Length: 322
Image 1 (spheres, rainbow, N blue to C red):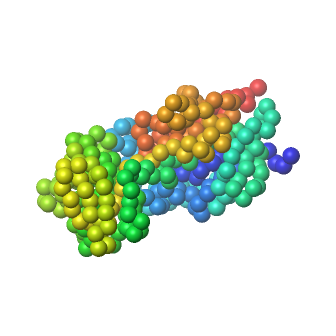
Image 2 (image 1 turned 60 degrees about the vertical axis):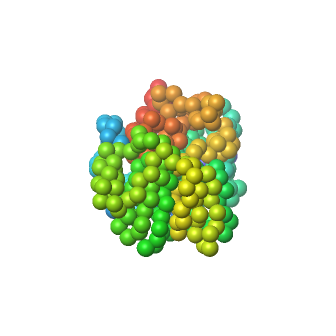
Image 3 (image 1 turned 90 degrees about the vertical axis):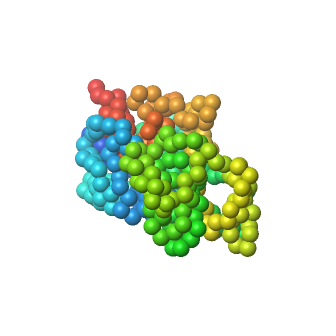
């Protein structure tokens, strides 16, 4: 058998970075990280707009950091700089562009990790921290094939002077709306009558933009159908009205990658969500989940993901005490 790692971490977002850093600080010598993209924090790089505010106490819920990572309020850029420094300073062994396909128990105390490239690695403990935003929820109705390039799940492809429809009711939807409203005509549509998942600061910005008529806010409104009308979306709303838009941006949250979790022998509940105990451990000894994939009550909280990494490594350390 090849080298056996103490801890193998799948995913290099906040939870994965925290798990690797805390493991090294707790004295584990053989720690490895697998990340399917070319760099750490891919979700932050891809889905956070430049200079996006990043709050330690996400959605107004205060989080007391328990570990060794000093994370404070900042921006997308300062957060990435922090994680860059941590990864470089701790000299963490990491394999980028290396997607894990499955994890299975090799014997009583060892897991076999198989990658998409059919490479095999072995570890005593597994931390799965792959997030959910990488697999965005999609609408149930069909998107016209001719317009799929204009139906997006972030704002990276948006330009200027477009008529945009943004769909969703979370922080990402609100932030997309007020960010794009500076150079575009923006409508924000949400199926519920009020926002319950948006932090107070974002709500303040949103309603300020609405009052200034920079954002057209439409609540209690669903989309029932889309059609291609000469290169534009003809959107059919649940109130019986239709309207043309140049582009649609969906911010509908993310979902657990169920098939992958099953291939990793992770026990799921009736809603296909991973089951974890107070130490973020799943169904069998040695498998842990960190970050949004662990289904914390505050999805998107970097501080909670950092705490998850500390909690997991502390628990693994406690098992190894004589």
